[in-house]
Image 1: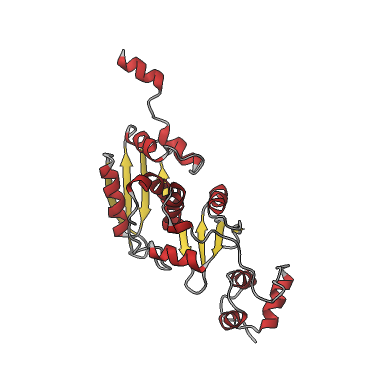
Image 2: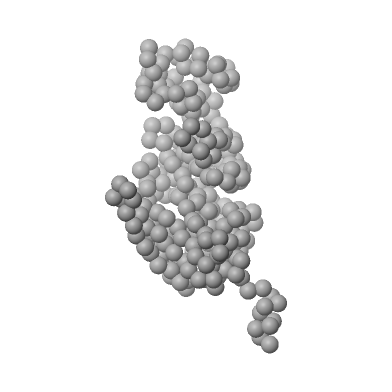
Length: 266
């Protein structure tokens, strides 16, 4: 019995851990129950005594109630997350693996983090849950979200945490601290983010460009050595340790220090 295309050992293990029954695994993978178990044995994967895939722990109510932690994680998932089409699993990719561990801790999830292999070099957090997947889809994070993800209806008090997650995900901050931008392929999301920056009275604009495949992408900018610290004051207030340290340091480097304020007043 031949495997279906793309069914590597790693993919088989991932599907097994997603909680699918063996009947579904066999149809997706193209192997018999015994052959699938042989792959799992070969890699030392622990099997449930009843022969059913082991479900990883996660707080399945995490995205049901707004909080600053939930808003930050949602910002990360909207930018760097992915929902699997075929199985009940969601993924979050981040170069900074410590961010993934913070997300796993907040969600009460087993820290299933895969380091980069082959052509994929970015670490990835894998969360297996039908409910989490459904809740993210209700918030606009679908399997093909890149060009269609909306700007979610985030309660006003949680907007700073959400925007911090977005910047931690797809934000770029110049090392000199004069400009910052967020890149997205969704016009809806770009306009929503632009409106927030305008409401916060920041110097902002949207630019567009075409990729090599002729797809339009949008960059939402905040510019100015006074505007970046102003943005930082908004999104890092009460953030605790939930942020990308390098991006924060770049954004606040031109912040006016207390001694400077005294001199200016004099």
